[in-house]
Amino acid sequence: PSAMREVAIDVPRVSWLDIGGLEDVKLKLKQAVEWPLKHPEVFVRMGIRPPTGVLLYGPPGCSKTMIAKALASESGLNFLAVKGPELMDKYVGQSERAVREVFRKARAVAPSILFFDELDALAVERGSSSGAGNVADRVLAQLLTEMDGIEQLKDVVVLAATNRPDKIDKALMRPGRFDRIIYVPLPDAATRREIFKLQFSSKPVGLDVDVEELVCRTDTYSGAEITAVCSEAGLLALEEDIQAKFIMRRHFIEALNIVTPRIPESLRHFYA
Ligand code: ATP
Image 1 (tube, rainbow, N blue to C red):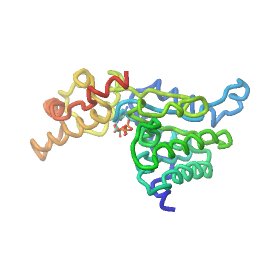
Image 2 (cartoon, protein in one colour):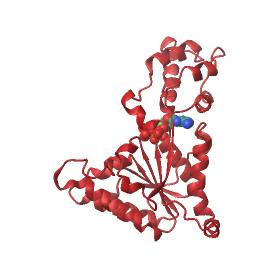
Image 3 (tube, protein in one colour):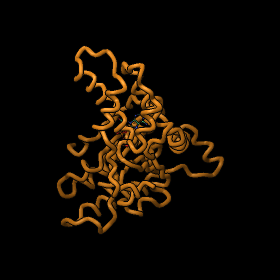
Image 4 (cartoon, helix red, strand yellow):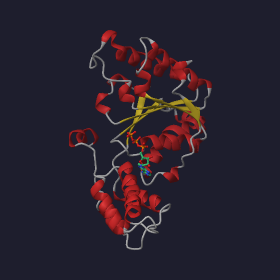
């Protein structure tokens, strides 16, 4: 029973509208996940096999987790979320059993989405990890077995997210496994504008704040970092005057100096 503690089954309340921009990512996911579950007959008619697994990859803080939740929420599917590192953190033999268990649970609550966050912790390339008896290799083997058995898994879609697609064993990317791979990029200007607008809708923003200026100045920021800039600006306004009624331009500008983009140069080429 302890192996299941990290698995939450629920329908998260995240809407597509909570996610700024990324329109093409949203559309691709609906096509890949919602359509096959809601209209299986059209796939039969067209003679195409819906994807078994969908892998979201891209830099940290760009809403992969949020997207997974919105997908579950908007499609009304049950949602099981598992963090890769938590499954690996087990006694000998327990990690494989935990993998088996989450798939079993996903089948039991179908139609469902089984979401593996930080998949790279679970599916490192074979032989690339050290350690006795190689837990990582056995967990990967178990994952492959479960994914291959998924044709009998009616109505379960496996979704996974990673910041490090380079670390994922290539065997997982074959057809019938993670056969749709979707890139979730750093936000472009249009997406950054939407994220700022979402943030502004719950904040008293001063009249001197120009969203276009902020969009221009956050070129390499992730969505999470933009959210952090907005919170920081609010804090700065309060620090200046605990009675402050508005967050002014100067607070945002100062916040941009405090919250700086973090995606290390050394990782950028994975996402190009
Ligand atoms: P990680 O890889 O670090 O787990 P992630 O890609 O899964 O990151 P999330 O945890 O989903 O990212 O996003 C982090 C936070 O950033 C969200 O909770 C949200 O506040 C904000 N955010 C990121 N992108 C967007 C967006 N497009 N619209 C609205 N909020 C966003």
